Length: 326
Ligand code: AQP
Image: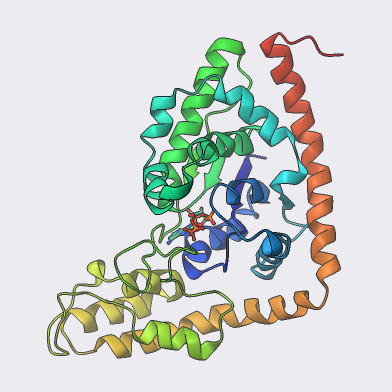
């Protein structure tokens, strides 16, 4: 069975961008692939963070993955730092990764701008750790949002460089994009992001979600209710594509272009469809909150299973490198 790997940072509240861009397809892909999903806590420490809450945020992120439909029966779910071979392989990959490649990464440039006071080596090395996450499991496919495609391309290059020097150990992984791989925030400008105050949280209460949707930016050229709109320029329509059926999308498209429906009508339909899909997730999350030990067990057992695979890969890697190893 072909293997999938992907990860999510425990940096804050999981939002509908994470869900639509990544988690939703993570669940769908479990039917066809051998899936490994990871809460990437070592990635999360590359920016300033709250030490007191990291542990709980890590558990909560695992909890949300389970609430969304992942389970130990359909995938391995674990915490990155529980399998230290990830960071060991990162060091080795560092030795085949040109610094120039890391400097030109869009995410590094964006994060360096956002965190001027702490542009640390880890921030720059982020995609190398990501390559190690993927390749230590020899995963061929990586379901991610559009923002991560450049990093997956770098992973391919790292695999190529390593293989050509030390022997063919790694596959060249490919990104798998969802149908809505780039969700903008409610500001309609920036990518929806945990660290920007522009997100709709998966578990936020309904009133808050509706308020955020109600005031979210739509097609900026549609100023008056009577102006025809352009769905492909509207972030709300993009979100619709993830939550609404085709016949609804056609109606919205037609109604928007002819101005027979307004943005609020469109948002009301979206809200209903979103809630239809999110309500069961929210209920499951509430139940799991009462059984946190179960969540911890899933993560701990997931790490045990992943460790076995990671250890085997590292044996091959050390042998390829020519290390003396007992
Ligand atoms: N807005 C988005 N649209 C589509 N996909 C998205 N993803 C994130 N935001 C969007 C995808 O979600 C997965 C997990 O993301 P992550 O938590 O590892 O990192 P991120 O991309 O940095 O997420 P945030 O919310 O932007 O976090 P912060 O603010 O902490 O940096 C990835 O597959 C990502 O593509």
